[in-house]
Length: 401
Image (cartoon, rainbow, N blue to C red):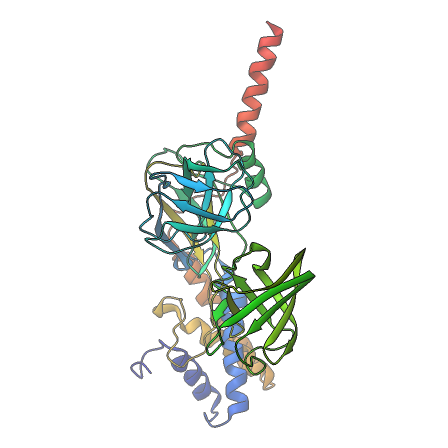
C-alpha cells in the first residue's frame, strides 16, 4: 500500500471506499462487490469516456532486409531444403521463395547456423541444386497490449503508411507479390498463438512406423499408455516420410502402439525411423496470444525502422499492488464512481447522487485537461482508390484526344 494519504494502488482505492461505507475488510462479500464495481467503472465507463492520451503509446520495430546469401538446393515433392551458406539466425516462420517460381512457402523449422530447413508443404517447383532464393519476414509480432494502431510510418516516405483491412491487403499484395521497395501499406493480423506443442518428457524411442491407407501406426520401444491419451492432440515432425508429419489426434493406444488418421492414403510396412519426433499440445494456457504487423511491399534489401503509435489494451485491476493507468491525481474518480454504485445498492439515494455528481465533475475536469493540440477528426481518401481514379482520368483524356 502507498502512503496513507495517497490513492495510488488498487488496495488504496478499495480501502478508501470501505472506510466511506464503514465496512470492515473482513466482509469479503461486500469487498468483492466493491472490487467488481471499481473494475466495471474503470473498464466500461472511464476508459471509453474519452480519447485519453494516457492510453496511447509508441514503439519502433525493425522490418529486416531479405536474406539471399548463397544458393539453395530444392527438390520437387520434398519439403526439405539445403542452403549453401547457413543462415546465422533461425528462419522458422519466415517466408521462402526461389527465383523463377511463383509459389511462396513458410519455413516450418530451422535452427540458427544450420544449412537445412523444412518447409510447411512440399516444394512444387523444378528440382534445382543451386537455385537463387529470398527469405522475408512473415510479419512482425506486436506488443501484447496493442488494441489498434493510430499511425505507422518510417523515415523513407514523407507520408504515413495506409492502413488496410485483411482482405484488401491480401488482394493488393497478390496483385504484385514480388514487388520490392519501401512499405506503403500495412495491416494488423488476427490474434495468433505461440508455439502450441511441447516435447514429451519420458517418451520412449520409436521402434517403427507403418501405414495402411489413412491409418498411421507408431510402435514405441516400451509402454506409452501412461504418457499419451486417446483423443490427445499431437504434432509429428521430421519423419523420414513427409506423409506422417502434421498435427493429428490420437485414435487409439495399446501399450506400445499409437494410431492416428493421416491426410493422404499411404501403404508402408513397418519401417524404422530415427528422426521422427512426437510432441503433445500445450493445454496450460499460460502463453499470451499476439498479433502481427504486415507491410507491403515487404521485400527490401535494407533493414527499415517502422514507428508505431497505438492504443493500449487496459487490463482489470486484480492484485492489491496493481495501479490503474489513470494519472495518480485523477484516480479518485474511481472512488466516486464505485461509491455511487455502492450507495445505490445500499438504498441511500442521497449519497449515491452526491458521489455521481462528484464523479461527473471530476471526469469533466479530466477531459478539459486533455491536450488541445490533438488532431481534429478528418476523412482520408484511400491511396489505392486515388491511384485508380487518376489512371481512369488519364485514360479518359487519352480517349478524348
